[in-house]
Length: 318
Image (spheres, rainbow, N blue to C red):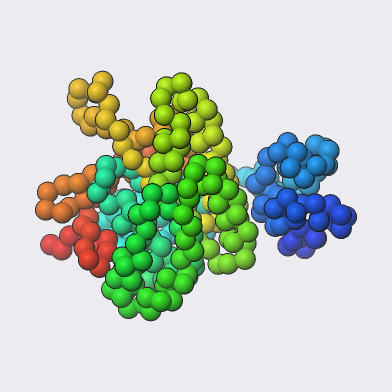
């Protein structure tokens, strides 16, 4: 345990200066970046033998506590998980207290169901102190469809009596223009997370670019393989850096469904099996939105009703 506490940076691993330089040049500048790396990929990118890469990755993971753990240790870790309020008490209750760190939360629904508004609200709320439902942290917002609006952020910040300019300064925005660019931005985000107090990573939307670039059944296997890697990249970041990862997803019609809801999230089984919480959003009468837990290992199924106002996500007043 004493050894683990001493190791804070890559330099503490006792690697040679030339190896540290090679890792840095290849983009592996932090313990976390090395710990979440695939061994064979790291060996190939850095140009070192696989056994050496395995040793470095193992040391980094051990230093960060990524090892065998008892069930009691896991319970204590769960108790230390941070949560971000959505702005709606009903929605927070559905999610077990808000959006969790160390996991991916996926919001999927049709256009106008509230996905992007929730992402905007969380990017503001994460900056609140814990007693107000935040984590006193910053957000990274990866925008794949050009839906980010600073005007919404400003209005939401004012509604919470926060300085709008300060709130916007604490949201680091990036526009992804291709699926490869999207993956690269997430890689770069690891450096930003290590330097800044990032507590939320948003990808809005996670599937749009993959779907546009790999249309048709003949491209499905390639698309799913690439998407699978991307989702596991996001899951590792959530776990290692203790941040909340929120992704949005579109729905598509399923003509084979005759009973119940004929829509399903785009992305098929890969998204369904990625670790995390899946929430379906749908529009209702009178501007209401309904959120439903579709999949979460530790949460009961249920629904919550909320509204989207000029000030942001709110509960319906009785």
